[in-house]
Image (spheres, one colour):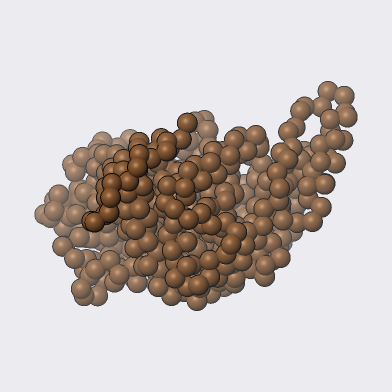
Length: 502
């Protein structure tokens, strides 16, 4: 048995009729390198079956503590059924990216079955060029971005022939305890909650203004400073730095409303070499270029809709705080930065430099905040109370009472070398991430080999057609190439040398 952390449990608590806690990835494969030139559901079942001992989250299912007295546990599923989790689907003709995206958005708009291990894989046929896609859904309570990559690495190989696997254990885990035992665990844990909260509260309060949505609440900064002054007055108290930053409240956009159960998805692969060329010419980082591209794409969309706010939009950027010692432990070790997006800046070069400054400032600020501050905050309330607080916070965000950000942007570095699944070569991997009430747009990308694969998820009622956004990403990169002096538009004079960042 393994207990979920309070942060893991938060991703269970956030779920409702319109919000789902699973993250997904759409991997597109070329089966011509596989045995027989095929990638079938049987091949995937065989692959997962022989590697199940390397995939702990694939074997776990939830065991709830009665009355919410404590956080749930992961236990081994004694009735594990591989055929339930691995399924087949198909794309209707002509099998292009838009038809594939429609299948993805339909599958991802269904919650996972909590009575079973919280994952599914869909083998999707009918793609143009004989390609095959694998859509993986796994609950965020079990993995974050880094531990999700570990799951992916267990399924993929460096060569089409596969690799030698470590031996399977004689037995896996413990059987699920009965309800009386779970109730006993909850009752024994109850006295520990106040102690845990008292330990976590001082540091959580001192850094409260840097937490999602907290900075927008009246009195948060004053409370944080009061706690810090009190702690500094205690003999031998450790130094806690409270960042003197203004509470962030993002401008209102169409993406800051209640979401529906329906999703829209769009995807695009963009040359990593082109992005690196802009990075080198301008003296910035790849992530700065990605942020500038996203800012430009959202700006172009909102201008076309006549809805661009005068103030800069704010993006939440998830970050991993997983240490080397925590690799292989799964669960969630994450934090987040809130970064102003230069959507109010006219001009590609100026927008890139503004994105660079925003990211640099946000990273400096984030380094001053304890890495496990989100974990501290989730420990300050009893599990049952915290679950209700999580749902209330997202509801307030949708109603405009709290609006810390407009969208989520995440850039995940991936492997620069080819990978294979059951012998089929991985061509691209598009993230399909989470949206919530109040934050109905998510742009996540992952680099692989010589390209960056963008996946855009949005609520259907907020934006029925997300494909103009991926087109706008291409336009943004073209504008940056012109600004950097890499290319010129036909008929335009050569641009002046770019101003590189010191």
